Amino acid sequence: MAKITYIEHDGTEHVVDVSNGLTVMEGARDNGIPGIEADCGGACACSTCHVYVDEAWVAKLPEKDPMEEDMLEFAYEPDAERSRLTCQLKVSDALDGLVVRMPERQI
Figure 1: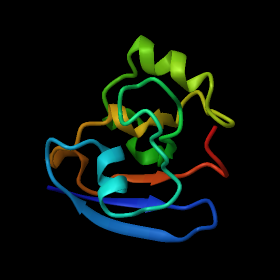
Figure 2: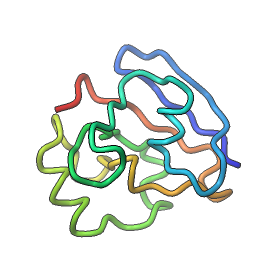
Figure 3: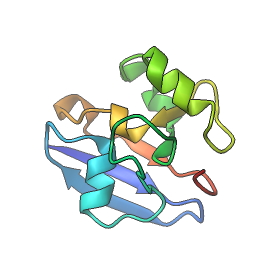
């Protein structure tokens, strides 16, 4: 289990425990956290679960695969370094303490 901090665009923080094996997107969905819409349900077929990963975590995460890179092109104001799709981040003990920030909106 990992403790993940989700920060809404307005600064509201949600700190939740997410079970290993779920995705960061599923953790937000299961805990009713606003700002991650996940329209495709986690199939990496949209960009509505886009977040900005805290700078301290960028190098600790697995690299983006080509499909995630492609979908991020459709995200609202993507950042080449910090933008990730939460459906592509599998939760493990290694993600304990992860901090993600939601964009102003999802598209």
